[in-house]
Length: 253
Image (cartoon, rainbow, N blue to C red; front, side, top):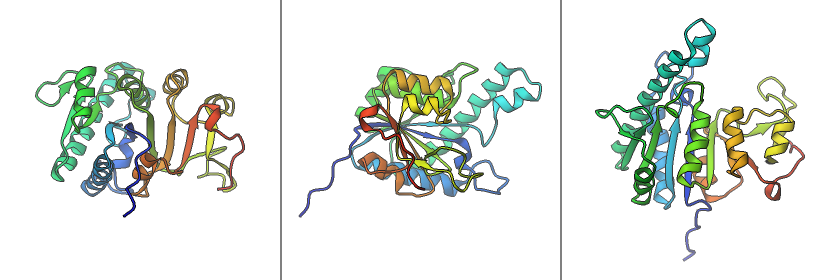
């Protein structure tokens, strides 16, 4: 018999937007069916021996930046957004536990009746013991996005890659939703992504990844096999990394 392939990455951070938990066109903020689908995908990766940490956004419930543009105090709006990520993290925890996956939720804002506080050594120990760890409440500070949370936590826990699940299948030289001739990058360097002004992550998050050489894989989570394939090292979406693994020319979509 052929031995099963070994995952490329031992420890990953999966970044999921809050909007990914909402059924398109639905009035419900969270779709149990979508949550259960994501939970099954995470369980599949965990079964391969990959240590999985998750950062989930809150945009399906509340967007702090949008609220601040409508006149709300930015810090207050951002704290409300952090609480939205807690709701989403608990929903994902429930979905994972329903299929027998051990989960720990760690929050950057203390709420002892809901989740344990973020403690780095405890988080890494949970991962070593096989628990999925969900990081919620952002960094605990206003003015930072959950992209920044993903970049920060990935570097703190010694993850080998950030898997950023999106609605598109990678990074393009222009918006593929608006430009049908947009060209997709399979590999691109940090400096090139900056020079082309490609919105891979917000500037703070991207700088953290670039300074610490943290690879980022941007992919479409609409394909339920993509998280597993990315963890295995298969070519999925677009990779942002150092020049040794990058190419500069956009590939045909």
